[in-house]
Length: 154
Image (cartoon, rainbow, N blue to C red; front, side, top):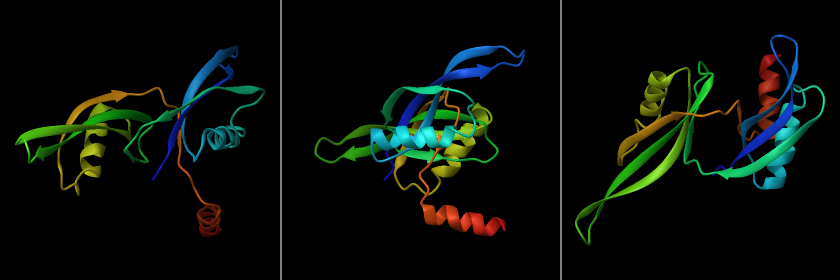
């Protein structure tokens, strides 16, 4: 089970024209607690940000599933309704869940979601797909997994 946290990071970004501009960018990190989320986002962003940066906000992100796509450079939040039948009343019940898909555009996001949902036995309806402002997603990796990937590169 993943615990996703949206972390907003403020720092001085060098713009294309060479000027510095204070920006706040959201990132998604997999962690067990708010404290670990803060530590992980600092660790992940240290190599990419020169100078001072602050963690402006951390909040829990309720995501049921993430669909990664190595070709995608943006993230799309999807609202999906799972449809179940209430046997007592005989009516359909819709349960909403949020999912995240990595894609280049809206059309590709829909394809990524449909591919990820292929094995699902439950009936579902895709209610909405919206582009997010997320800059990057950092899933949790064990030290052993990182070590194995490092050995594969050698």
